[in-house]
Length: 406
Ligand SMILES: [Zn+2]
Image 1: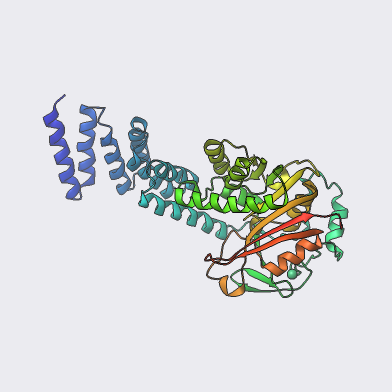
Image 2: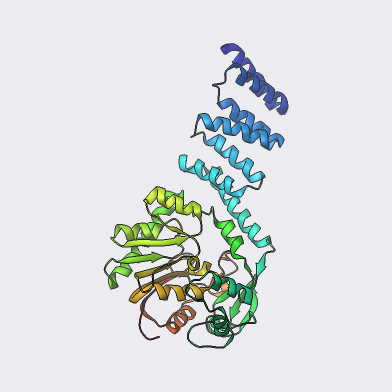
């Protein structure tokens, strides 16, 4: 091995690089690799140069070589993430940037790229032409086909089409509020329609379930790689578990849309027997790895759960994300035992906040009065209503119990 010629090649490569002659710089780095195959850092440099030249396949190959030698090479992981992002392989890019942050929490450029990935995901969702009307017959039948407890699709459709007052929505024109049968106006803000009676907002058109399933399969909350945010989520969960425990001793709990299991983790620490569902496979894996807890994969209506079983069902920042809140609440009521607890946390949004705090993936935006009225119409009895307004976006926490009124 000739140390001197390695240094010479390295100096020459850097010289060509500063002169803007990237191809010549690559040639010299490759000479170093040929002289000493253990100079793995060189592959990272070749990766960067190929990336700059737009040779994405060569860049990918070289970054992978560098990583295969040193799994903690954050610069090569970051480079690989950028290659994936350029190739529009967003979930692979997210995984690479998350790995950077797992190794080095302070790697700001990886955080910025991760934000870019999530923005791209949202844009894809916006531009996707596969939109549908959630109140169309085909949507209703597709929902009810996969729901084992409701076999009679025709009867179900009639129930939606005939105006009823027991909490089910009655609309077939897409302009009737599914919560109170009021009239939807708008769009008021972006694509949000607003009920002129209960004030709840609804997106005019939803992306299809399969699009959402595809887009969210790799989704991770920033709290998964940001210890400060994780601690804040866990603190929030602890507070809300304490609300539950004012009214029930620990029992069986189901978390709808559990994300990475922050709430389940705290409840589990407090001796609750926890269960939950989620559609992000990455979040489920993260939770298993980090907290050792199992989360079921799938939308709530796709999972078979025991009836009259759970002591508590939790919708922690998930009700605003579901396609059909009526169906969701229906299932929550069904799986809860009599006098079981329903805990809901959602943002409390009013008109003036909505354009500033618009969320592409919130299909509904709630307010305290509208939500409270709707829950009561299902026979849930209020136990605690807490408005948290010291945060930038006010939140409401609602605790109800399943009573035998209906
Ligand atoms: Zn309404």
